[in-house]
Image 1 (cartoon, helix red, strand yellow):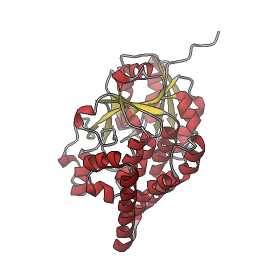
Image 2 (cartoon, one colour):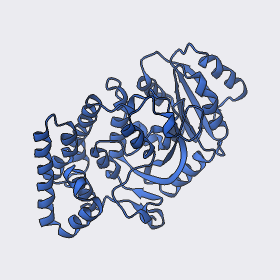
Image 3 (cartoon, helix red, strand yellow):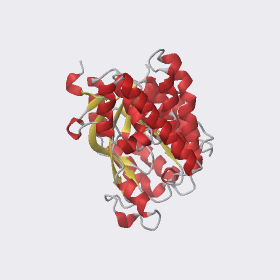
Length: 358
């Protein structure tokens, strides 16, 4: 008789992160929801990680151990995607953790909203010792601006709304996908997401030749397929230890992100025929063009193009455009971001509070 399928499959990629493994494993074992499997994907660690996992298995059979070739994080995750058996998928970076109620509360969200393929919560940022991240933890690794930006991170982004409306909400397909065209991810980290396995497998594998931008591209494709549900609680933690490549934003990473957004456009045209006008598709890439412009003049031209698009939209959709101007501001319009918000508002692709979902 076949063993019953676990409700949640956890992918735990590991490479020489022994010092963080005990809090990572403890955060799994302490979950109030216990029906899960943990698929360990160790890339032949040399710091005692493999031996630690073998000791864990002796007392907890929910852990499955796999040694995978040392081809990078995303190659390991791709191997894990082939192994998952659970109805839901959780990707557990080995240096992060989550609150004991993470699985229980995220599952409750997805059960209340079966059309959502993603449940997302906010992140608590912590230092190497597991305490809440502070400025003094980062002064030797990051600039003042990077520190300021990081300390404001961890919250799932949404289209501009009055703050009183930022409550648990359902975001239909394409909402989060189009917000990725702002020039950054809607989600701070994979650690804050619980994903239906059917949605994850429909998304396909992570790219393995684009560095730390691979999770961004995977999330763009995922959010083009399914809606998400958001819980504004910090149930996941993300650990800062100074060498995360995703913090070091440069034009190479940004260009890769722009290319990923550009590549998804033909699929969006085919999957949602007639939803967006040709001018909408053209304007979606303007924020990236502005960010990647190599000269002040080129950047100014793109900003003027964004403003011209908004003026044209003002003629055809005056009330919606004025509302976007009011909520986003003139600066966001010149950055091209208000164009995306305008598209979301005009097409009704906006968050809906859970108490309005049936």
